[in-house]
Amino acid sequence: MINRIEKTLDKQRDIRFDILKTIALLCIIFAHIGPEDNILFDIRRFDVPLMVIASGTLYYYSANNKKISFWNYLQKRLPRLIAPVWLFLTFFFISANLIFFLLARPYPFSSSEIIETFLFLKGIGYVWIIRVFTLVAIFANPLLKLYKLCKSENKFLALLFLIYLGYEILFLKIGHFHLHSQTIIQFIDDYLFYLIPYGCLFGLGIVLLQLGFKKILFISGLFLTIFLLLTGFYYRTLGHFASTADFKYPPTMYFVSYGIFMSLFAFCAVDRICYNYNLSNNNHVLIRGIIFISSSSLWIYLWHIFFVYYWQTLVVYLPKFASHFLIAFSVVTVGAIAVTYLQKKIISGIISKTRYGQNHSNMLSMLLLK
Image 1 (tube, rainbow, N blue to C red):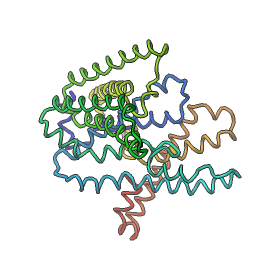
Image 2: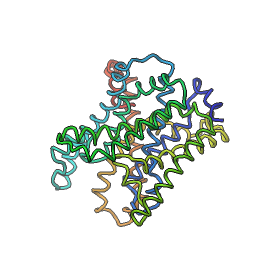
Image 3: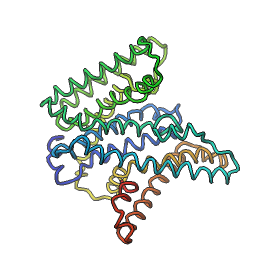
Image 4: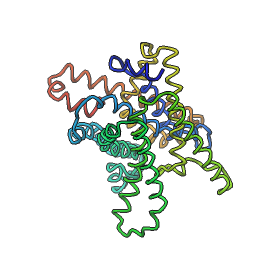
């Protein structure tokens, strides 16, 4: 079933990955709104791994049959990823001046917070995922070449697994190295320890549709087993069930194994639903909405930051029922999608109807339409 659907991809969009990206994005938004004591808050914690795996598959589709050099790819990909984020952050911090002035409250962001945010470090939060996708984008082309060099999905997956095990060993032993350079320590903590695990997940995405259904089930079962064994180990060691959140920054095996299992489970479920209901050829309004969300995921994510931040700031002025997480989630999600839709509609109109838009269509598309 998986391979048969794959054969139609050069003629039509793969709606499965639009659905998976939409699920991942909604889970990420829920993470910034939902209460931590809600069971859904723990279940949804496969969101970023799912988004990275889906990105790996979509990159394979776009680049597999093309000869794109490493530098040409970076010149095209990095500006499309980073420039819109910097544009949004510029708007966010400048608009905050006006908003907090009107609220008669002091400006809440320090210079160091602003700089860290633009560098995708801690800052105001929310932007660490941009750092992950930037790192993965830098190494996407070498990963694809490594896969082709292996000439086998099994060899490539085995190599990824060995690389990941090396990372786990390094993570456990790094404290014994007595590093004195703060720059090296920060590079390892903020970059290397995110690049390796998420790079391996991206690599899994690259080969995902080359694997048979049974092999996907085997990999899913393997990582479920690892997750359950670690759950038992941490319960015995700590005296309570450990949260995967404690193993997320940076990601280690307890978090990663859950992420892989749930992501592959979600893929298999979505694959069957798409097959049973022929969603690839369905033009229903819900499908069109999912495609819009998937293709606009970056700007929806950025606008959700704006809505999350100011909803949490202003909710104290609203009736008590407004603080319920379902209302907050609805406001933030619908708001981010609606603003993104209006933004793309306005910018598309400027490009098609004005001389300025036609002369600067590439720049406007890169900054505001991707």
